[in-house]
Length: 488
Image 1 (cartoon, helix red, strand yellow):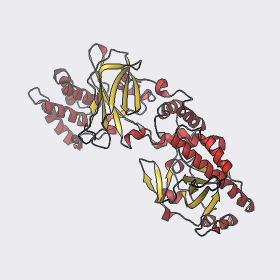
Image 2 (cartoon, helix red, strand yellow; image 1 turned 90 degrees about the vertical axis):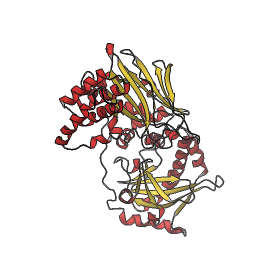
Image 3 (tube, rainbow, N blue to C red; image 1 turned 30 degrees about the vertical axis):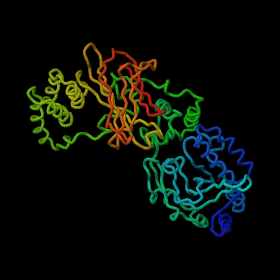
Image 4 (cartoon, helix red, strand yellow; image 1 turned 135 degrees about the vertical axis):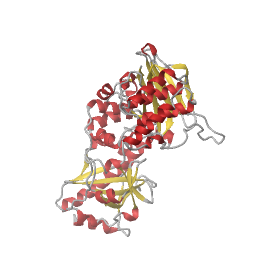
């Protein structure tokens, strides 16, 4: 490896510069057309030029060191499926892996490595090289430059993790420009320990593919409703990753039509809901997505028992409506399994005339007495509308409550997750199974005088479809939308 590294000292900046062949530029652009959108095509083009230019140079020097021939990992035919989901190219040299992180910026300020190349034990590298590609000149005057490198261990422990972008960043000053240093560490263990990935079933994978294969999603790897661990487990599998790539190209029918409908009645039975995890993938208890009310801070069994009595008394019919509503919510947080609280909430369900109070009583009853035939359930699901939301997280909220004649009352909301207001012109619609609008079941968020969001939530009026009715809930912003299918 010494001769390989010493060759890098041929210019004043101690960095490697290599000319990009015109033939590679032409072939790279043809290959880039296999990706789904202009941004991904450009990423693929830059990565193709970088690895095609770098590997021949590296191979010449590795021969002199009797080291294995470098190969692109996991194989040239699989690269488009990788570039469709993340930028970067891995090169394998024996048991060592170099990952090229490619940019067209003339002056790099930092090395930003996607989490996929760092926290995925199947993909992670030993060394990460910051590469710039210059295409400003004529076809025969384009070049690439290696600006420095770091190791997996340094990137993992010293890099700044950016959660919205799912990436690790190091300033260029923290990189090693002199690549001869790589020679010193070549035989050492330079990887940090990372957690293993979960094992996905075929059903789980197909559920994820249905959500992430939507071509309208700008970057499926940044979908906040899917954990990084599940995302990494999905794209690590060559077949699933290829299927995702083809779906985003429109060559495979997306799950918009294939995905199973969420059976709302299963939500009323915890055991059934657990057994049908695939159907409810992405749906969580409302309290797992949003913080519970402050009243949940009551601590200790004795304190809880003392608090239940006053809350029950506030449910009496001579109390103001807002007191009854608040007390019902508090009992849902502190009254688990308590007979007095269960009896009081069951009574309130029958006695309250205010619909919101009845809903609160049903939802609280569902928390403290799961399986109660009068109880309600409230769940939320983080949804991704891609670049339209500019990193803002929003959640679709669905609550259900048993109604007479075997019907379910359904209540639908959209709420922001980490900001006070929804973006303006966000539309919530209820559609028939045939994707036709249902009159009166559509609402949109408003804007203030400055054009900013005005509403902290939007919600649909209660509707109660007959048993077995299939319907769709759609959230739309500009030209992006997410649709969830349900059966009542």
